[in-house]
Structure formats: structure tokens, C-alpha cells
Image 1 (tube, rainbow, N blue to C red):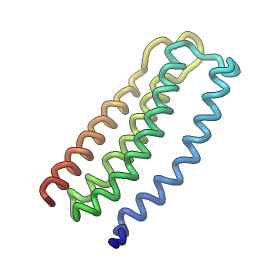
Image 2 (tube, rainbow, N blue to C red):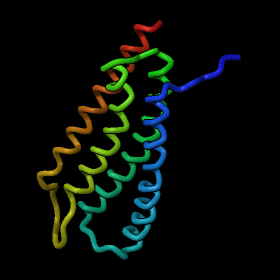
Image 3 (cartoon, helix red, strand yellow):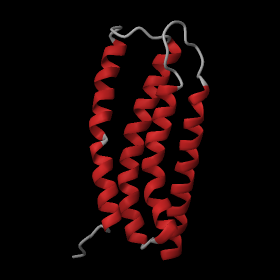
Length: 140
């Protein structure tokens, strides 16, 4: 039987990533307030709140998986860090982009300039998964 031992970097990133789930839980509670009408929002803001919350949950989960895969591929150095941090960073950036770009009171119907955080998060996601994918294929 093979035992999986995470690298120190992956353990640290996993620990921090798991702690972010408390924030995602808070977001879920807040979403229940939004859908009950307790928080006044435009349809645009509700859609962006849903998108931010969904991306956070999915990408944090994927980020934890990528840590195991990066260790399995034996990635280290710069590429190891890119593979390990790309997806967790994208979870924070994409979610923040959806939330912050739709903030405001009144009739907010389109994203503000902070939408760039979504694009930056997508870049981090792409770099992380491509680096990890190539690393896994090279390790074969």
C-alpha cells in the first residue's frame, strides 16, 4: 500500500485553503438572505453574487485536488508554486471580482472596474492548470 505524504508547501496551502471555507459558508448564509429578499439587490447583483459564491466553492475544492496532483508529479521550484497556487488564487480573485464589481446601492446593472479581478483570476486558473497538466504528463 502506498502512503501519500504531502510536501510542506502543499500542507501549508491546504491548511490556509481549508480555512477559507468558513468564508464560503458565510457567503452561503448571505445568499439565503439574498434569495429571501432580505438584502435589496438588482437582478444583475444577484447573478454576480451567485457566480462569486459558486466559483469560490468549486475552485477551492479543485485547488485542494491540485495540491495532491502537484506532489504526485514531483513539481518543485517556480513551476511547483505556479501549479499549487494557481487554482486557489483563482478562487479568491474570481470570487472577489464578481462580488466587488457588483457592489453598490441603487440600480447597479453592470460591473464596475473591479471586474478585472475576474480576468486576473482566470489567468491564474489557466496558468495553474496548464502548468500542472504539463507537469503530470512530463512525470509519466
